[in-house]
Image (tube, rainbow, N blue to C red; front, top):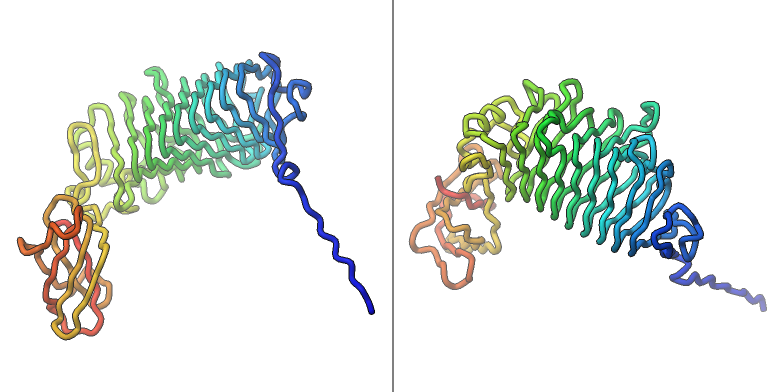
Length: 378
């Protein structure tokens, strides 16, 4: 009889997720002797929870670093020193990162603010490598806590993409009056879904396309420096602010008026759902210097739908937004023509399902297949 020997190789969880902890107080983070398991790498996450120094002329190249407490004092004052690159992941969960000068991030680096504070001076981030090489942009995630960039922010990544995601907390950039431009070079994307992004100005380089700010939630606050996308057609050259469908976000520009917002919308540097074809007043609402989506631009979420074939009765239920509603019906999902309309009247049920409305009506169509949607009635 032939016997087969089966060997199972089991790796411990510690081997799969190595850790190293900073032990120096306040010795520098570049000295391997100040870590209990050597310097951090992309496969060995390092944690700093006490005061520490990051001496000048030392890059973070291929690190996985978490700051949970204390103050990390960064000694560099030049963008050529103490770069963050090589796919480095730097996650600030607590404590404070202090740096007086420029930070150059590139090569797929990821900086995440998940609590705590980062205070940066100079031009806050440049993603191009030394000598203009293009080895990859960076990602900045702000979920809680705050990061303040005390000067202009210059994303010099002409060939590669850098992305800034604000889902909570606060990102403050270029918030001093003498600085006039906050975004330079192409392929920079801001995604604001929560929290606040505030800047003295939002001024885009005139020669570089593909600078897009998407506001799906949260607040975008532009100060006295204003919004200048340097574009006559923000759709063609992709320099614009876009409010997607159902955005709950707001855009505030110091001293802006509805006329100013309408001008941005006309030239395609302010968009609704990627377009500026729908009349401005049908999608946007302006109060003072703040702009948001109006009620008619909000789609209504249908939570239940039933159809009685014998009576042609339809019952739809949806989340109540506190306005008046209109139901549209179509045979082919084309709601731009041949649409039947049913007004929602006082017979709607507003009590059986708290926070929702249920409405029963007779479908005016005769087709076997129908499609319905609920809109805010103008």
